[in-house]
Amino acid sequence: MKKSITVFGSAMPLPGDAEYETAYKLGKLLAIKGFNVINGGYFGIMEAVSKGVVETGGLATGVTLNYLVRKPNSFLSKIISCENLFERISKLIELGDAYIVLQGGTGTLLELAAVWEYLNKELIDSKPVACYSSMWKGIGEIMNKQLEKEEKSINHISFFEDIEKLVEFVVKNLQG
Image (cartoon, rainbow, N blue to C red; front, side, top):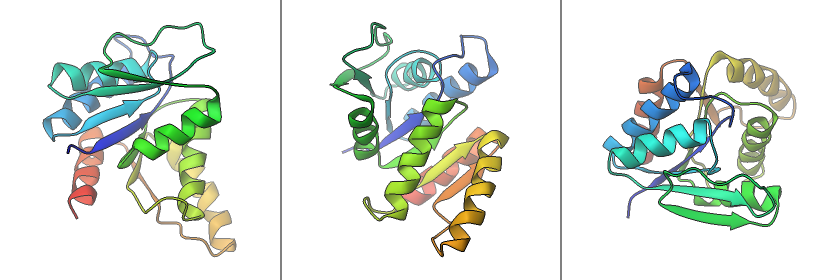
């Protein structure tokens, strides 16, 4: 069975935006490596990564919310609908064999924080977590200072500014 990578990111980027094109490239790279993708199912980064993976022969699963009026993006192979935001985040975490965090806002921050907390509390087995962009590196540095004080592991998350190196990291960590 193919492994699935949960990708978190903003709904805001449009086709042609750098963030959208990076997510599209990520989807293609993951499909080439034999992975399927799980994401929030809507637009922006979620659409771009879904498009990239599906156009390259993989599957994209969208985990959506029942109460949103927005329609899921058209590149999804499967849709899982959830009643509330926390159920959705839990499902996104549950389905992933690894996690990739791209550019985003407070929703993406909440998703990253949830994954991090699940790992810190050992609610899930250790899984690769890779963040893309300097934005997340700054947040990671702040959190790692606090985690060191709490004597928690600071090695749960890796940070990248090159999408190909990020994919290499995920592949290496899922093969080992």
